[in-house]
Image 1 (tube, one colour):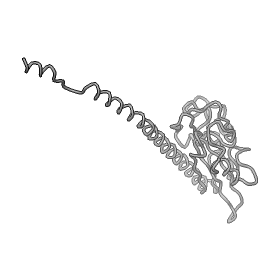
Image 2 (image 1 turned 180 degrees about the vertical axis):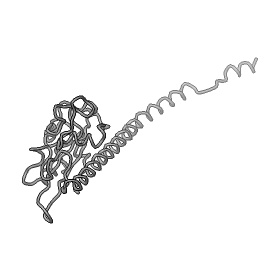
Image 3 (image 1 turned 45 degrees about the horizontal axis):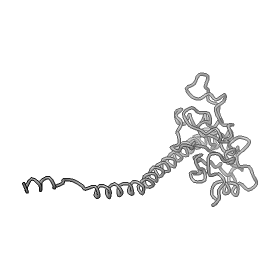
Length: 224
């Protein structure tokens, strides 16, 4: 009888107290680990968008070098001539462009820090603001001057390449396939500061490419 009672009193596994402690520990771990996992996700997005910007700049550089070979003077997509700004008739046109760029992109309180900023009017979409293959928030204020004529994209009926139309030339460089930003509010944008001068006194154009998620945080430039 004593042996039977001992067996009945013996309990395998965790007690209620042990279970409660384990549950509390798991809840604490989940709470503290969630931000870290979230950070890993954001970090991966940052790396991807910077890698995508590099791809776009590499394509722009190849385009520029081809123009040097074929036309004798380099230009970037969207420029009809090397000294033209992009967007055409807009972009960075003040007497102190460096200060204007710093105020928008690199100062501690840089103005172009989100997709809804009015600074976007100085920039155009790399692959077209109405491109169905990329997302663009309706409140973004990009200059649409470089979008495909009539919003007709490669592969659609009636499309023909317009030389000097930025998004069309970029799409041609990527075989018609636009690159989509990994961010919810992201979209790849660019602006070009036209070159100047001639001969030994010439200055090449400069292209900036950014992610509309936060151009101040995610941008790069190329000056040949």
